[in-house]
Length: 453
Image (cartoon, rainbow, N blue to C red; front, side):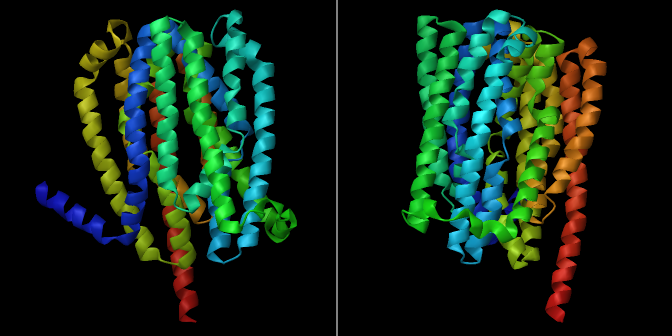
């Protein structure tokens, strides 16, 4: 085993692309590690303060807002990375500035639409998800966080493409620390669900507003203080392509809400807040598996976009292969550890009533092992020009998932939901890796042929 690990380490260090990805990921991982530790303390305090049922209601409120916000979103971070990166590679700073400006304006409009939807749908969320119409004001209260994130996605994309990962990382930590501080205060004051909601609102607002400030400052440094006056008509020649990319990523993200990101809402709707609480805890513990992997798609995507644009096919192949070995190896070790120690961990940290979360945790570990090993499948498809395929996959999975949810979740509850999510990851990731492989071979062959002519 040790010779294999030594060989893997040497290969990783000898690959400049992987070194760059790991370096940028390290900033996010350091922040993610601190944020994960902080979030775990938050979760323990919150779970003990609220009890299983209110813990489930909290999860429903958070996911309700997130789902509506993402439904209205156009995944502007990916669009900014894709096209600002392309224009910067071409030395066309005016179009790069115009693209960021247009993305920010579109995102602001989407944020106001999202908040209006949250306000209008809050009574339905309270009745059907929290099972208590009196909680409608809590849904609206948490919805204000959408306005704090007015251009957060566009800002994230800009900081990514200019390798400002350290800045992203510490803004994330700052938000988590503010959240923890106010959760501690809520715990001492026994202020219940409202106190916890305010803690999340204040913490996430600090992070989002800091992100916006950092991105605007970076834009001014790169393009001059009057960059925001750049006319949008500079993008006219690529408007169709940009629009198709934005629509594809929005459709993909919207369908992903059904497949992966609305789990707590389905359980709340079809079962009850107690089972939602169990499932929320299982997902929280999965964050220990996700912690070092979650930054990798963000840092890999800009690198893949650059290398594919340059035709560096060997570098891309090496980056993906070695990245999978590292991510898969870590996930396997963590899955074994959580499988063996999950029950005593839950009993000690969260108390005995939360133990039913363990079976869902074990089932989820299977799907997340596959998803983590091939963490690069979606950014790789975007970088190689197959932005529509994730939407197609998610559409097919959404149909299967909805059928499965209504067939099995009412009878088998959150355990069925965990099984469906794992199966969705395994099938979706496998298809995406297969299609990327075909597209990669085709593009590499075309590039080689053109160079020979």
